[in-house]
Length: 437
Image (tube, rainbow, N blue to C red):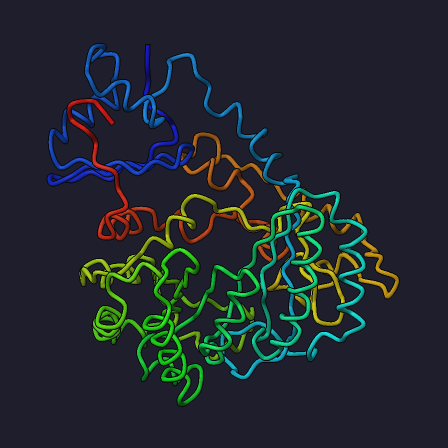
């Protein structure tokens, strides 16, 4: 009657079993009857009357024997790519107050001119009716160097969405040095509910990368938000740590500091990424400091057992498809150039159009379709448990930068480690041994 789902990712040892189903996005755990549960999932027909069968069916961990789970992947992929939501990544400026050695940007343009802002608003007025909602992500450069642009555009977009009865949401990626309480209040006013801030370890490694004094500025701003903003529902700050071998050497110290400052505060989530040669520069200054493996990255973090919120990894596990694959996603540069990707800013293949003074967005449909039609099925995708999370799309930019390689991202190779961190954050739902949810 039943069989195990091909979308299960299972981590099991003598103490527990962890299950993540990439289709239903359910996280399940048990520390009891581990072997029985494992066998029940592997061979459910051996236990036709087991009280857990309805629960596991509801969680998608087991499915009907006749179910072809892979048949819907194409439909899900199309729903994602052709979502009717309009997503704009807006660069209010391409300047930055820091100069990180791994940064791939060239800081070519200053703040977005009023003319370009007007052109964007004019285009939105003409076209917003064609979409179900508007989602904006503020990027840079350092976007908070152009707070007046963010404020002006946000107010006009909010007014427009209100009049058109369209939902509006916003997020921002910032280095955090300018994120004082007044700026934070401004972002809240303009519906920015997600903030990503990047750290490079504790003060000694962060300042080495980002400049002397920058760590203290960021931490001071985050602590002010921690202490003065009491609501846990209006904002979520995702702290990304870019890790090199230098950072690893002081990881215990860093995790102790984060624990002291942010333990058990659900406004803050933490995740870690290895630094890469994102500039694709043969003379990359940090080449000797790059990590050799994901195991090297995660081992000290897992072993430290810091009581931090690692829930940020849920989004990374559940959706591994870059927004650039979407037909209705655009990057609006400060000079009005329309792109798809925030990394390949100076690659002509990424320049898909231009905002005109008239409020028209002139698009090169050929270039646009190169990004939208980035699906590339490779042999190992055939029965991959991660299929609902990536749909064989992943990072469309890699179609240009490394076309010969399968485009799996960090998380597909990090799953066992990420599941461990999510368990430390109590993400997993306990399997009810009596069978009732």
